[in-house]
Amino acid sequence: MKNLHDVQKLLKKFNIIVYVGKRKWDIELMGIELDNLYHAGVVSKKEYMNAKLILSHEHEIEEEKEEEEDVVIDEDS
Image (cartoon, rainbow, N blue to C red; front, side, top):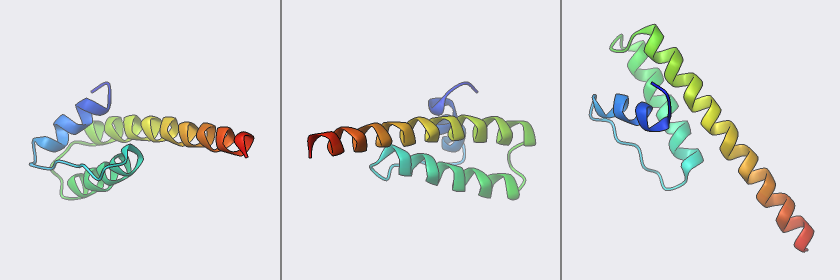
């Protein structure tokens, strides 16, 4: 597993498709679904930890994008 698409494919194996409409929210919901799968014992600890790391990284990127957008909006005001 290397990227967000791979995490989506893992979730899809369990018929879980996440689309809320905002990428950041999608990532957060994928994390919740992944937690549920791990606690149910259907994904290995290795898969879980790797997927959580990817989700954390992607979430960080989205947070940075939002901060950059806020700075641009503040400068325009």
